[in-house]
Amino acid sequence: MRFIPSSVFPEIIIVEPDVYGDVRGRFLETYQAERYAQNSIPARFVQDNLSFSKKGVVRGLHYQLGRPQGKLVWVVQGEVYDVAVDIRQGSPTFGKWVGMTLSSDSLRQIYIPEGFAHGFCVCSETAILLYKCTDYYARNEEKGLRWDDPTLAIQWPVREPVLSKKDSRYPGLKDIPDRELPPFVFQA
Image 1 (cartoon, rainbow, N blue to C red):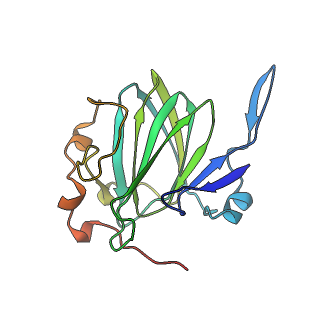
Image 2: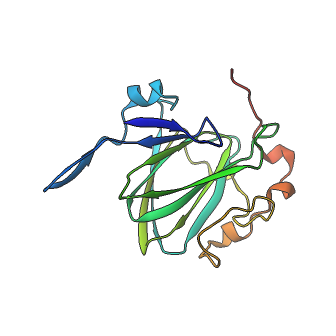
């Protein structure tokens, strides 16, 4: 198993699991608290989520303010383009983003820490995405930013996505008041 810091944000970790395959199929370990903690991924996850979506769906870009969530994300069926945006006030990488393909072929995972907005686009006919969260979902803390914010210029693999009403109404990053963005906390 390999743990690789992303080239844009060292705190975002890409996990390449060891996958064992034979004529019966495949086997892999999807999470082991001690090993992940040794590789800069918190050992305390409190909630697991599953998203089943169709081709062309964009979900996000979401974050929680008062109860921020770190997320360990992977795809168990299909393929998605997964995106994380640094929205931490005062961060030297504020407004920058990273995107990568996650699929049931590669079974790579991505760890997105607190302070980042997260979203994904389904590239296959359907996709099942699983993610572990470091805090519970809190509806009153849920926030988001516009998936196609021109100041971010995210290179989504879809021009006319299927969006929820809520996701279609989120503001651009520059229109979000400072009080609704998480602070950057420097860690040496």
